[in-house]
Figure 1 (cartoon, each protein chain N blue to C red):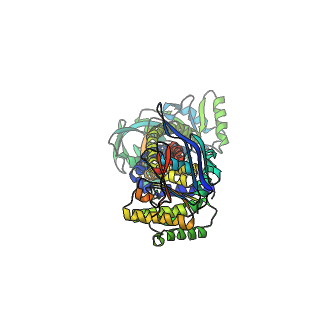
Figure 2 (tube, rainbow over the protein chains, first blue to last red):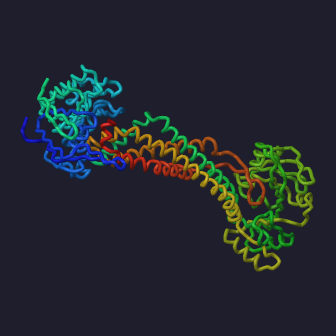
Length: 232
Length: 395
């Protein structure tokens, strides 16, 4: 793991206006995550975990402050440039997998590669490699409805990995899975972190899931506390 | 990857997800299909009517009416005027030197429609001896020609198909006399096929209009001779008859009633389109709502907003085109070739067939596309603006 920060959030504030009321999610938040880290972010509902994840992935912008990720200040990038930046640097893993239901596993995994200049044969090769990495080489042509929850999440991991992004952002990746399947998914994420050096930021409610991370940050009332440095 | 490729990918995902929204998509298809079918039925009716009238006239046959009379029914021409026209310049003559001029009497009589059993006006035309030589395409297909001076009629094929009681050999009461149907004629589906024909002398006698005609038809040497005949007529104070080519006469008649049908069809279709538009909007908003997570996920992965916009619009256009095509097929199946009759320019029934042409089908499909375009535009804008955080769902 390198000491150079991959993610640096500086004095970030996020506020929402609901009617006449302004809701502050966090104020002047600072965060630094080095390259190659695997961080679990925990905290009560409404603490701003997912909002923080969105800021790291260029999905959302802070009301004020700066967000630097992979060498770019993404809070000020225009929308088009931000899309390209996301395609090149970030892989997303969602709680409910977010696979396209009418596409096969291979076609789902191929989606991020369609944003690159790779030819069809090269894309196919990378899709097969990514699905092999998550032990789904035999499910290339299966539709999501023909797979279990664990298999769908592994397809989602392959999709997040296939374009070789530096950063993986996981939003409750095991929230919809049983314990055994969840452990398999978390081991896969751990493997990606340890063997391939991927930086992973994972939002979770599950303390067992957090144990797979190198460290856990607790976010509550806009303040971080570092609880554990744990690994399974 | 180019924007075009992104658009193709997102559009393909959209279209392949239509079966998941089968019923709501189907409702749009049906609504658009009905709009197009109604529009095309009106346009086919107007077109059939106009084609029947326009196909009836020859450019080198002059029709002469009393000045100011717009139609034969309002006109009156004397035997003296007929004689003067027979001597007019530019009139074609037979080998025996007879001018091809026919003084004609046009009488309205009652008949019963086969389809509805209701009474309607039809035309009984008395023709001069040269009336047949003037008209191209006349064919006696059953029976024989009427005898001069006898109470005998030949009946047009369209009229025979549409009205009861005019079968060959039947006797019919017209005015105060009983007439016998002795023949059936065809004339290329023109307006003349909606008429009964008899000898002009017999009609004059049995309808007590001796020495009275309502129109004169004359075959001219060429179309230009028709206007020369008009000049001749206007220059002679004994004539002062209005002269038109038969083609121009029927074109004027077609424009009036045909235009009326057309003008009825379009507003009706536009009103129905508003209903179909509401359906299309509902369908496409539902589509965007159902795909919010998918759209947001694609955007999170790095796809742009324009592909989401185009994909949604394409889905709407596709559903509308399918609806338009179904509507055109329905119109073709149920209306094309359908025979109907309506009032022509002389208060008599003109029998005609609905005619659906490729040009009319294009108009129907264009209307469907307009419904699809407007119905898809606003949902497409919404699709392009789906917030990316929607990829993470409600928390």
